[in-house]
Image 1 (cartoon, helix red, strand yellow):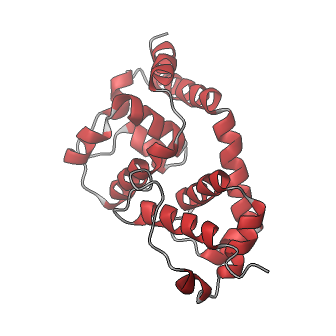
Image 2 (cartoon, one colour; image 1 turned 120 degrees about the horizontal axis):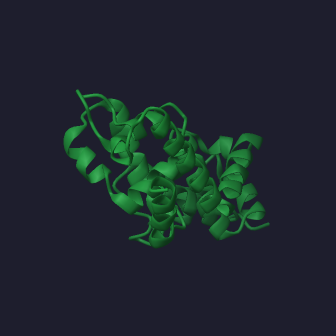
Length: 202
């Protein structure tokens, strides 16, 4: 038996956790962290990571952990071997495999609502009377996915302006999560820009 089985999964978990919860940048440092074998062996949860290492490849673990931290930033290591964490990951994979299709559907839904209320595309991002922009309210209310919100920000970078104006706790959580999440999204900016152009100018 390999007593160090699980250490690579643990390193990946720690790197992804630090990415979402600290100033650490997983992509800048290529997921590298200083972890000793001795410190790993002292962990009571090392068997959880051994199970995950047997089940998933390295690249899969990156997205497995990322998907779960997006869902619950306060999750603990023991929950990662449960059915719920696997469900979260499988749902993320399903969404990612059809991301362009899902993005287009959510954009169409937004456009339909704008037309019903005689509003324009720019109204999605407008801050009026210290109220949240429509797009932010849609995200907070669970009416659009964080993926669609994040992709739109990749294309338009509207949060750069919001960050200077919006000052409340709910948006603080959103801006941090979105900033941390965007690098994990497999997005061709030009492709999604064209989808938005077709939907919102049709």
